[in-house]
Length: 402
Picture (cartoon, rainbow, N blue to C red):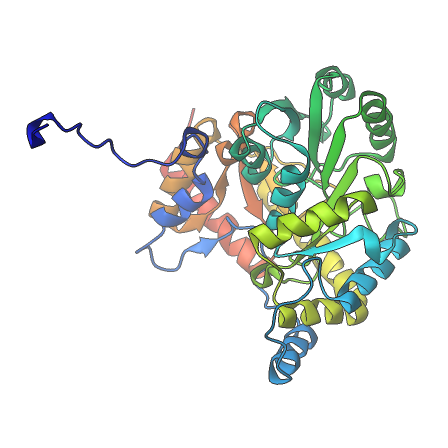
């Protein structure tokens, strides 16, 4: 065979399931801000405040003491014990043997999906939704169907009957995020009870992303420290996996530390998956997690009050802008609202970055059901929010709509 007869090499590509994943439209908007001076960024889901000093100091002390080695796949024993105590206080008896420490909440979501779904499995997700939850099962070859929240006079609401109809006997897993990113919707205890019973009946796994559970603002005066959780209702040995993170309640987004609450029977296999994904979370970061749990309750409660005040302030400010339709959500750290031009939210958000230096996230980043809305993270001081609203007004003045 001559060289002329050799086959032409094909272009090297990732496998089809990976190539089909949605790129981040939030990042696309952020990229549009490169080179724009003094952008006000409200697009990412994090506060503009640094992690509290007592947490940073714990990590520094651990590093100075040489906490730089591998740990147990499921986390160091003191952190698992501290998490078990924390979860038990909020949601009922939970043992350290039902806790796995992970390298971030998103890693926990991937591990949970790897535990229970594979190629061809059917997954249901409630949307609009942070895209990672929808795309993770697709990486594993699963098929994802969505049930959309509806928007109306009372903000974002779930049609429970529609969700139950989608949870058919051939469904392997339900992925649900409450409090929800991006809408701030919070699933009620009654709806959780009905969904849990339905999933029990058909053997459907529930993977609950409860990362925002502490960022909860009930309408009535309440002593509730957390949003309703499936952990309040489910026994610890059934098909419920709850995912959480240190990122939101303790402002530890960059630390990449999370945890899973799951049946003890899963832990050996979960440990294997941790080994083949990350081996373990960094030792000194886990020490910082212990400090957050043992010293951070007052900080978290004050943070929630600050966020509620910022939410209410931004709702009032945006409600005074002609054409804006916004409702105060019960949880998380976002407003998900409509405004003139948001029917094409990606183009709108890129234009606002370029023209007035206002950075908010397009609703389409959270799936087709999010189109027509934009997301604004209000985890900052009110002066910064006011400056952002003023830029929104400037943009709309440049683009009047009849």
